[in-house]
Length: 188
Image (cartoon, rainbow, N blue to C red; front, side, top):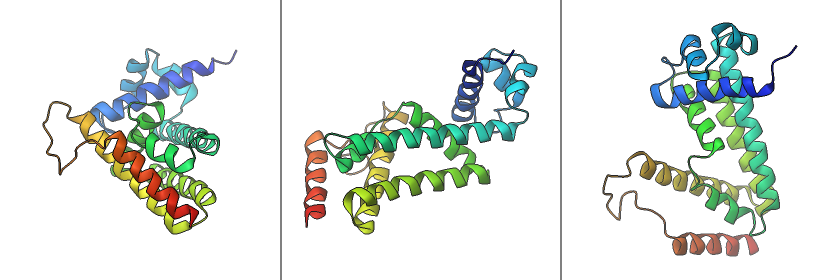
C-alpha cells in the first residue's frame, strides 16, 4: 500500500525547516528523518537521496509559484497591486520554500539555482502579460524584490531599531502611491 502524500509533504517540510534554520549541510537524510518523525527507511521510500529531496522542494516551489500566478491573474485590485502587496508577505509556504531553495542555490546547488531562475521567469512573463511592457514588468518585479527584502530583514531582526533611511517599513500609503504610479504608467 502506498504511503499517503501527507508523509511525503511532512518530510519536505522537515527538510525545508532544517535548511532554513541550520543550513544545507545540517539537513542530512538522518536529520530530516528525525525532524519529520519518520524512519530513515520511511524517508528513503519517498526520496531516495538528498538530491531527490532538493528535487521535491524545487517541484514544491514551482507549484507554489504557479498558484501565485493564478492569484495574480484573479486579483480584484489588479496584477501590480497584488504582486507588490504580496511581496511583503513573509512566513508563508511560498516564502519558506523560496528561502530554502535560495539557501540551497547559495550553497552551489545548480538545480535550486535553475528553479529560482524559472520562478523569476514565470513571474516576469505573467506580469508582462498584464502590463504589456516588458521593461515596466521588470521594474515591478524588481520593486517586489526590494519590498520582499525589506520585509524579510525586518522579520529576521525584529528587535533591531532601523533608521528611516535604511530598511524601514513601507507604509500602506507609500505602497498605494507606488501602485498608483505604476498603474498610471501602464495606462499610458
